[in-house]
Length: 199
Image (tube, rainbow, N blue to C red; front, side, top):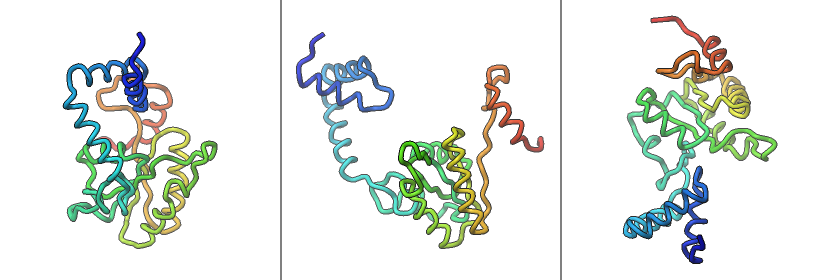
């Protein structure tokens, strides 16, 4: 189907979103133009405002339109515990779990020399300054269990231990509600190594 030039541009623009292919982008474009023009205008305004106003939190590096994000600005958070994550999405997931009340540091990626991502790109100079200010008793390394995530966690653990601070790694293994027969061997091995006393 031949699209008008402007509709084609809209479809192409929507394809910049993760997981959105040509068909999904076309479906979204048609929906916005056929059924929800007011929503489309609101979406365009909010995207423009966010791109213009959202930067990084001065303390944890997550996305924020203020100097400090709501987590870092909260006096209720435990400032003695710092959890290091790869992305703002990881931070949001951990914070939503209601099991963590400390502060965060967001790397915005992981070490990947082949892609040109080293310590400078992850803000590790800022991370070291934060540790050097004192007041942190434990750093929780919550990077992904990929090769890059593991290498990043190892690198960070060395930085943390050099300062006499406890470095811990999040447990990884069998998910809640998971059936053992459907869990891959690597995950099962990690779960066995990371086992703890039964309660």
